[in-house]
Image 1: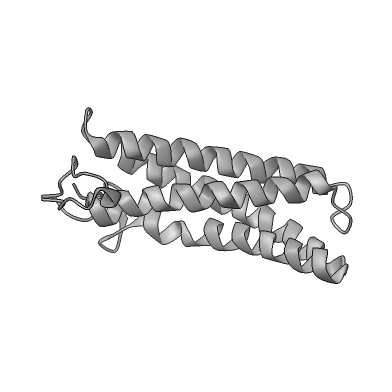
Image 2: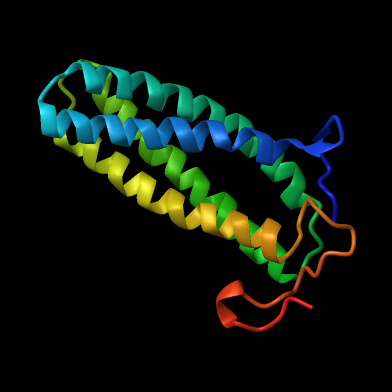
Length: 160
């Protein structure tokens, strides 16, 4: 099935997901640099990256929901899409809580804020894999003749 939300003939959701993934991921990398260097400038940058990642993540979610809603019921793609979407809502929520904890003093975030970022990034790697499964294995948003019930790419069985 092809994407329902397109811009210039291309699906919008995959165009947008690079922003929250990159911004939230860089927030965690800047936190790691802070933990190594003890230079609080890095946590300030992480604070703004995380804020921008939350906003762009919510925007990407709107277009992801439009595409997910169009997937036929009872298919593996619908189930994988639900896990992908709900998982990413959890990711954004974890980073939102991290951002709120940082807000009083972005230069000196509590340890819990940094830990939430690590957990959020770990979960984002899983939900990102699920998104790849939807596009690369099941053909969601790419091909009208997609096999929406193809077995997992981990199964070693052919998609068709």
